[in-house]
Length: 457
Image 1 (tube, rainbow, N blue to C red):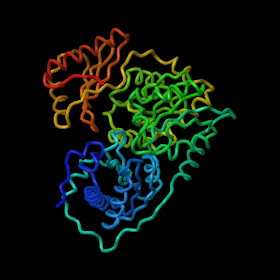
Image 2 (spheres, rainbow, N blue to C red):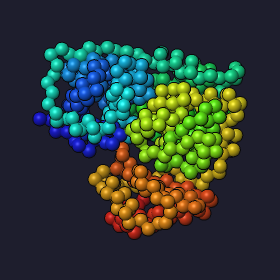
Image 3 (cartoon, rainbow, N blue to C red):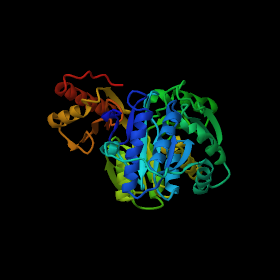
C-alpha cells in the first residue's frame, strides 16, 4: 500500500516536496479521491493543466491516466497558468478543473489546486477521501488534448474596453514561470509595447524566485521600468494567478493600494461589496465606504476568498499576496495576467499614470509581508498561544490569526497555510507609530513564545 504524507493536504490546496512527499504514485491516489468527489457532485469531465515546474509534466501524465482509469473524462490543456485552467473550467459544462502547481513555493515543490462543480475544494477535503475504496472503471474516461489560449486572449480583448489609440510600454517579469506562455502575447494583442523579462519557462527559476510578494524579486523589474521609461511593470508568480505592480517611476505598489485604485474605478460605475483579506490596510475599507460600497474582510487565501465570493457576490476581491478576483465583468477567479490588463485599461481610460493615481491615495506607513520561519508542526500552536496570552489592548480580530486595530494603526500575526512560517504585517499613522506597533508585537511574541527564533525576513 502506498503511504501518503498527511501534511501535504492543506487548507487551501495540496502541496509538498517532490518526489519525497508528492510524486506520481501519490498523484494517482489523489486522482482517485478527486474522482470520488466528482461522482458525489455528478461531474463526469474535468479539465487538467500544469505549470512550468520540472516535475509538472510527469505528474500531469499520472493525473491524466488515473482520472481516466477511474472513469472521468479528461480535457488536458497542457502547460498553462492557473488562471487559464480556471478559465477552461468555467467554459466547460462541468465547471471543474485540476491544476498541477507549486505556486510560489521553492522549485522542488509541487502540488494541486482544484475546483469541482465551480466550488474550490480544500486539500483536507480530498484527504478524507483518500482511503475510500473505489475500483477502476470498466470503461476508461476519454482523454482530449485542448489548447485554450486563443479563446482566452480573444475573450480578454473583447472584455477590455480602451478609449483612444494610445499605446503603453509595459515591462513584464514572468520569473521563468508559466505566465511566459500567455502574458507577452496577451499584452501585445492589447496594443502594448512589451518589454520581456525572464519569459522563458524554466522550472529551475535561474534568475529569481517567481514570487512578486517579496521585494527582492522585483529589483530587475524596477530597474528595467526605469531604464526603458516604461508606463508600468508587471510581475507574476510561478503559476500566474498573482500580480505585482511597479509604477512608471519605479515604485512598488503594494496590492492593497492596487485594490484601492481598482475599487475607486469600479465603485464609480456600480455599487456593491468588495472583499479583502486581513493583511490589507485600513485605508482600503475606508475608501470603499466613502464610495458607498460595502467592505468585507476575509481570512487570507484563495480558498477563503472564493468561498466569500460565492456567498457575497462582490464586484471585486483581493489580498495582499497579489491575488485579485474581478467579478464585475469577469469570472471571479484570481488571474494575474487579466489583472494586468485591467490596470492597463484603467491607465488608458483615465489618461493618468499609476504614480499620479497612487499619489492621491492616503499616505501609508506600513511594512510588506514579513515572515518568521517556524515548523509545520508548531505554527498554528504558536498563533493559538499568542492569541490567548497577548496583552496588547485594541480591537482584536481573530478570523485568521490575530489582527489588532489600534487608534494609531494595526498589527497582524497569522500562520501561513502554504509554508512553515508565521506571517506578520504592520501599519501606523506615522513612521513612529509603525515602529512602535511592530516593536510591541515582537516584544509580546518574544515574551509568550520563548522557544522560537524571531528573525524577520
